[in-house]
Image 1 (cartoon, helix red, strand yellow):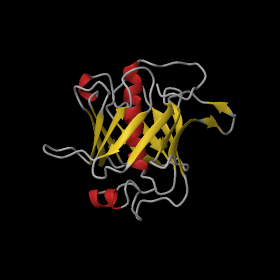
Image 2 (tube, rainbow, N blue to C red):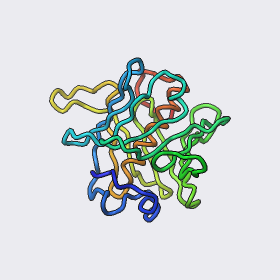
Image 3 (cartoon, rainbow, N blue to C red):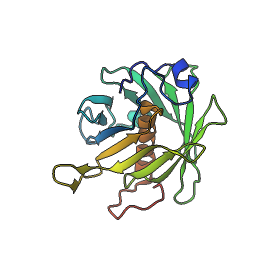
Image 4 (spheres, rainbow, N blue to C red):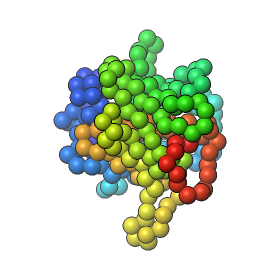
Length: 215
């Protein structure tokens, strides 16, 4: 899955579907690995089914300057999306920008919890197309949730990963991101980063069985 050629016109020509140069004809299965929060260079690395690096996020550590802005990069270090927390916000709102964010640049999408009380779904708003909206339902803390379009169709899914050789369920720092045909893989991974921050802010790291509500 090629991701380096995402640009503004391609991103909005087909909603969040990747243009022909970046689209996958079949479901793309990615492996997401979250690294330690206590060492330099920590963050995420994402691999395709052939073990090739697809996305990465570095310097995602405990330093406060990294908590409010995240950068999703391609394998060569080029910025695909910049994610920034909007403060103040009771709904834990984040906004996404294409490529590196510069002064005066407008975000292309926003992510917020649907409710500030208890567990709730997460809403994704596309700023340049008010009729286009996504809902994220399930439990990211348990690595079991879906991204749904306005028609309630699943466009991407987060699952626990099972080691194929041993049939053992892996820990939550390694999980699967399945992206349906026509959906933007980089956009899906950007949403994963926001979900991880929201989940971490909630302080939910339960080891109990998965449920259907988003932590």
